[in-house]
Each structure stands twice: as structure tokens, then as C-alpha cells.
Picture 1 (cartoon, rainbow, N blue to C red):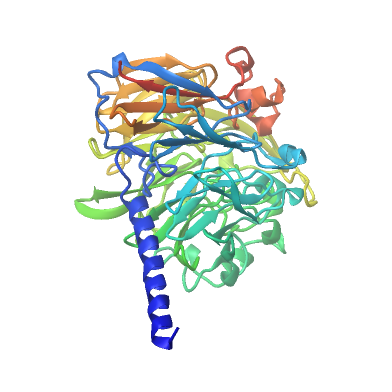
Picture 2 (tube, rainbow, N blue to C red; picture 1 turned 120 degrees about the vertical axis):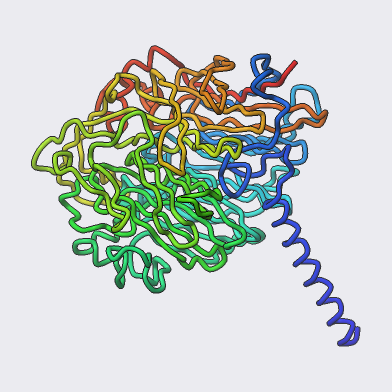
Length: 594
């Protein structure tokens, strides 16, 4: 073959590869309305579906259509994916993946993949051996983060392993529980392990080969954190060289925490992906004076290089384990009469933040739950810093009591949803407070590195949760539904005007987005900490699906089988009666109109 022919073949192949890549990206950026191809349905994590066959008038008629047992008993977080009439279901450890055929009655199994993992990874997981979901690449690949530390790629048609890449080492306390994100031909994964003194990071891999492309740490030098220039142009406390080292005492940043186990979002126009980092290493704040950057931080990064566009630290020198990993929902809003490309984040610390996602400036920061946090009175919009209440600071010198929220936050990982019909967010919340006493502890790789005794209990009012509608333009609640237990399942909004959410008792509820009026409920076999989703079946009917199976941090007492109030990092104390309310068990429930 002559040179010109070789060049022609090479050019054709290159153009073909580019076309496949561009086509793959368009499927993810503009998903079919009846499918659910990623954790929040779309990159913005709004958890909103344009489907409206089920609406406020007829949702009362929903019936169970079919169910599926996952065969696993621990906490079932996350939601299934639906792509091309196939549903993909994941489980907690051992992180089983199923493919179900939606074109056939009862959705029979197409394949089942059970990854090989060492059982001794299980006790390393802080708060149950959960997994928050799958990611999909339109070339026909599925991705799941395995608890023991590998990112696994599967063939979506056959369930066969394509590649498996190491990302964490459970022997040092680092595990993996979150849903990865696919952006173009990159898949990005995070790590858990803030209670073991890990040094958090996110890692990007090539979707086709599993080759590591880059890694960005949560602590350390600007080079390691991939910060060039000021991290945030608006706030002096977030400007300076190597703050990921200088805001720690001695070499504390090396066990600095900042795990990255939450939800990831992406703006294709800005080419930025967003995520939060968790608590700083060792809960005893006396052992780590300083701001402890860049724990408790929202990052905006380029997905192909990892370079940080901006960073915003919500809780400098965190004294309460207010992990900053909760979802960052992207929405275009009117703030102060001006259009804003906004990022909305409901932090564990009790404040709902609205930022300009192009530059990291905070525009709104207000309480969002049933009660206001008391550790800080407000967020100063000029400095970006919380205005702290010294009464609720924590230390090893005393037991600090009555702190609200507790470490589990006024909202934990359970994701909120946004509705363009109302312009409001719908937020499942906790109402838990705590007593907290720091304890001196030394770091040893692979051993717990907590350094605190925590006792949690119901907050003011006695109910342990509420489901809240919140206006991001004003930072004010529109309505709330009080719940006996934490509303620890995610939310789903639809164009039918309905919002769905689950409760720890096991109720899946449908309420009116505008009024909060309950329209329908169904009792599932176990508590719900999963996230409802919706899809269109091959016959054109709309379905609602949710995973039932109690566990996670709020339900850790069931997983551990204990009523010790200090167990589960203090969470068991807040839900000590739960052992008499629900049993473990993994079930997928699917509903439709008759």
C-alpha cells in the first residue's frame, strides 16, 4: 500500500474514532427522555425527568409492576440505570451487577457479574459497605467502583470484565463507594476513608484501557492538588501558595482526609466537573490547627487534565465531621434579578449554598432544614467564611453538647432534586444533633483514625427528619413534611408535577411539588436509602423504580446488629429504636399505572 493510501486509511480511522467519541458524548449530554444513563439522569444532577405520564392527578393509582431481589442484605444506595431497554442494577458489597431485560415480562436476568473481592475489605468501610451506582459509556461499557479499591469496566452486553484498574488500597483504610462519572472518554473515580486518615483524591482513567490519566489530591502542594494561581479570586483566605500544606500542622496533610465519595456533576459548555471533598483526617480538631485545606471543599476541574478552575472551602478547620461531599446540582437561575449559571449544594453543615459555577463566588448561603444550625449563625458572603458560635466548638478538653447538626449532617449523601416547573429544590433531610468530645489518637495505616466520642440524638421537635422544598433564589423554605426517622433516601422530580422520596421506615412517597400534599405511598420490604428513578418501558409506559434495603450510616445499627449508642460513629444512638422497625434485605421495586 502506498503512503497516500496509508494516510487515507489513517485519516479515515481517526475521523471515525472522533465521530464515535462525539456521538458517545452527545448521548450522555442529551439522553433520551425515557432512559436513565447516569446517577442523576443528566450531568447536572437535577434528578428531574421530562416524563409526565404519571402526574399529580393519577399517581394515586400506581401499582407494583414487578420486583427483583438483589440477594444482598446491606444498605442499598443509588439507583439503577436504564439504557436501550436494559436495566442495570448494582448492589452493596460484593458489588454485584445485574442486567435485566425490560422487553420481557418480569424483566428476566440477562447476565450477572460478581466481582472477586477480599472479604477483609468489609470492616474497613466506615459506615456500611454501600455502593452508590454505575456509570455508562455509550461504546457499551459499564463502570463500578469496588469496595476493595478497584475500578471495574464491564461489557454492557455480556457482563464480562474488560479491565480492572487499582485506585485505592483497603489495607491502608482507603475504600471505594461512590458512583464514578464518565465524561467524553474519561471515567473519574473517588475514594472513601476519611476515618482512616487517608489522603483523598480523584483519579481519571481512559475508558478503553483503564490507563490512569491524572490524579488530583485533596491535600498537599498546589502541584498535587492541581491548583494554578489563586484557588478562589473572591476570598483572601483561599489565596496563597501551597495552602494544602501550610494550613496543616507539621505533616498532618499526609493523613489529611478529604475523601471524595460523593456525587459528581459536569457542565459540558464550561467543560468543568464538580465534586466535594470530605472531612479532614482525625476528628479531634485539637490535633490539626489551621484551616486544613483542601478538605470540606467544592472543586471545579477540567475533566481531561484535572486542573482546578476554582475551589471553595465551606467549613475551614472542620470540628464536627461535616463532610463536604454532598451533590452539586447545576441549574440556570435568576439571582438578584440576574441570570446565573448556578451550582446548588446542601452541605452537611446545615447551610444551602448557591454559587456561580463559572468562578466559585457564593451568592446565597442559608439554612435549609427543619431547624437552623447552631455551630455558626451565618455564612459571611463577603469573606465566604462561616460566622462561628464558640459555644459549639469541639475539643479534647470537654464534651461539647447540643451541637446541631450532628456529624451525619442536616443532610448526608441522600441527593436532592430540582424541578424547573417550580424552580425549587426538594431536599431529604435529617434532624439530628450531638454531643462531641475529642480524644487524642495516633495514626497507624489501616487503623481507625477518628479521635472523638460522639453521641447523636433527635433534634428540636423530636422528629428525626423532614422532606423540604427550598427556593434557591431566596434561600427560604417553601414547605416541609416532618418524618419520624431521617429522610435518608434521595428525591426524584418529574414533569408530571410529582416529587418522589423514600423513608427509613420503607415508605416510598409521592407528593405534589407545589404544595407538599401527599398523593400516594407504598410500603417496601425494607427501609429505603436508595434514590427513586423513572424510565419508559418498551411498550411506552412510564415506570418508577427504587431500591429498598436499609443500611448506610443512618441504618448502621441494623447492619451491625447493635444498640450501642456510640457505635457507628454515634449514629446508632439517634436510631436506637430502628431495630424494631425494619429488617435488612435488598429488593428492587418497580411501579406503573394500571
